[in-house]
Length: 109
Image (cartoon, rainbow, N blue to C red):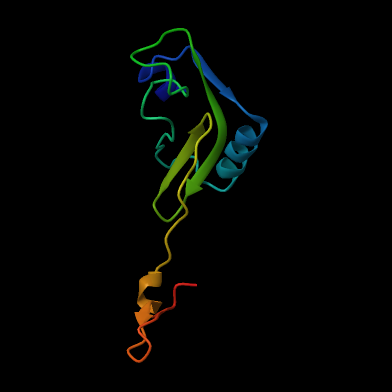
């Protein structure tokens, strides 16, 4: 809530039931002291990309909260937000090759 009010200028935050459940879970697991990285649109201080500039009188909706334990941070999802999946430790391109006899690509699917 401090980030929403002090940085983005929001009047407050509204947490979905899922976000509240995850906050309680992560607190119980001991992750409540991890730093926070907000996941929201880059076009606005609100969760609405159409509200440009520095809007006033808005509430920031937190739909979900996730944790990246390996990276060491918690990230609330503000509004509708797509996230990228984590990458494997061994990149898939190691399994892609061209068969020298046929010239066909192998290992893509």
